[in-house]
Length: 453
Image 1: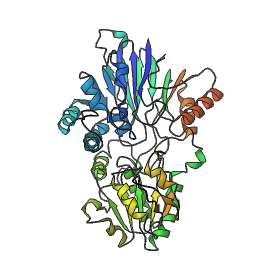
Image 2: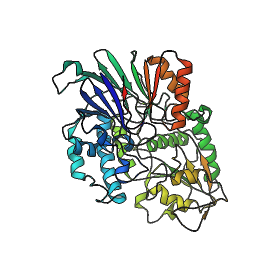
Image 3: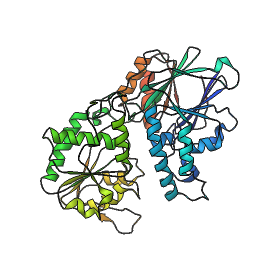
Image 4: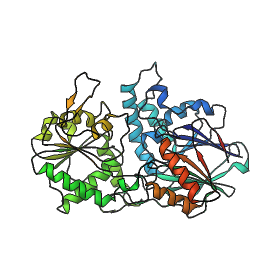
């Protein structure tokens, strides 16, 4: 018997964590925290699986909503074996240490005992890894040969090291897409799907509710970015681009540099900083061993100024410049949030958003504002007048909804379990699949609701 149980995430984007019981072999798919919640509320609900066998944790990629709860999982289930790709293991060392620093700022020991940097170092040593498309076997710890599972990772095209996960138990095949992208970005090429029929597909649904006309081709969006940026830069202003340190920074940095080299974008100073510059080096180190749009391009040799070395953000406005700062949603306490408060006051400058914004974040509030609007930040009684330009771009690292339907068409599953999307996204995807394909069962993943396959 095979059972699927969402432990976190499922019908939302955050704290992704899914439990599979395959003939008694307990497998966790991803183990993330919810970026918009605090304390225990940010974690997967491990109580749901406290009486279940927990043998393996397979990690699709190193974003916080897919990996940052691993230390809590290991504390709860110390014998779990963790496996991922070599690149995700390397990135995890940075992202998990970064998560320690963030948790210490945001939580108290009364909320829960957060993990330490020493514990992260030990955890990294525990993580096993396998390259893309190299099949390996995970054995049942319960002397049940029927529970042995063949596993392979498949390039998901989302960020460096991201993987869809194929599980084969006695010919029954389950494919978990993780976060998947079927189109090229600037650095990361499109996903490579497994060349086999799938029995159960666990499918992300991030952009299920988004009309694909809103998700422009990467190059077209890059040209539009250059056109709008040139208006600001040639008038003496600067542009703030909030980015996620892992993935989005590398893609936007490469896009901007390519535009400058082609003469489409004004050559100005580029400011970056924080953990993102360390991640750039991991991208460069792995450029010959993974799929890459241009293996000869190196992110670290693009001229950049470290904004953490500046005395104040006033330096951004002395000369036209482009500032790439995390977090991507301008979460309070991050560099992009602090810089945004100053950019908002600059009438000749601009804030360019480049990706998804959660409605509960400052980034969403700012992205919806226009010059002359008054917005409330910091829970202040006084609104701030928006004097800068606000422009929104979509450089997506996820498949659009038509591409997600194409995945279903190619893999021909009997069952589809929809995860990693809000209610509207999952509803659109479910109705479309049922209308397009006959004989497929569609399930919406809900935390704590078991699905028997």
